[in-house]
Amino acid sequence: MAGWLELRHLRSLKTICETGSLVAAAERLNLTQSALSHQIKGLEARVGAELFFRRSRPLRLAPAGQMLLELADRVLPEVETVEQRLNNLAAGQGGRLHLAIECHSCYQWLLPTMERYRERWPEVEMDLSMGFNFHPLPALLRGDIDMVITSDPDPELSGIHYSPLFRHEVQLAVPAGSVLAAREHIEPEDLGDQTLITYPVCRSRLDIFNRFLDPAGVEPAAVRTSELSVMIVQLVASRRGVTAMPSWALDEHLARGQIQVCRLGPGGLWSTLYAAVREEEARLPYLTAFIAAARRLTGETLRGIRPVSLPE
Image (tube, rainbow, N blue to C red; front, side, top):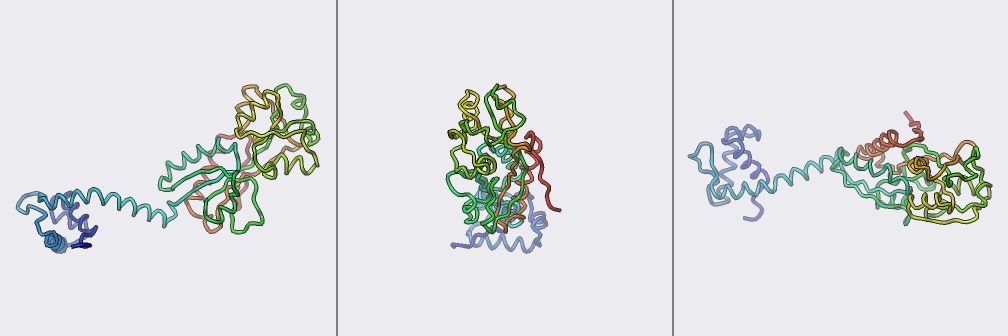
């Protein structure tokens, strides 16, 4: 008897129980009453027992029918869930979104974005990892992850599409009352006698080095690292050094009077944050929806950022 029980049998049995008659069940299933009756008789022949007490009105399940109905109640919801997920996947409404970030301070807006996104796209499997202990863009191309939040596109890697999220200003945080805070802006030479506190990442990934100090040939007096943004700010507040962070990451501490902020260079040091995905997946609805959600939330909540003009 192996392999004879089909999903259509379970669906038919459940529909008969829900409607109370073969006529109503056949109509709901888009079958003729004769075809449905033939199906049930064939199933009874396989089972070797009646599924319904036919003289009862409405139809009442016999023990064998009750056993199959219990199976239908367990199996059919799971099947329907998987079918819906497969349909969503085919339509670009579901899939996997494993993110990596190259921005310590991005947690401030990224986690709320993920929470909001999950409410609208529950079928997408999400995960998040830090991109500081491996090279996330090559990992993206290999398929290990699906999106990288980065401010450092690699033009030598083909097959990656970069969607700009927003532009932000990197500012220098100094202790409250520092002589540097009185200056209209900071020049690279002003940091030659300072201890620069950074995240423990390759300096080529830090704007303060690759776009401010290195082009001017300036090296700070010392470099100190810390994993946590809040710890770095506390070190600055206690006059252990200075640090460069996105303006939004400094707002809370600035409001408390713990630090002061300075502009780096006369026009400020501006950086663009991107969402990088594989080129062939750049138009998948569930990926473009996440990027749109990130743009909306950051535009609503982050001070001083600038939207990026997108091509028509």
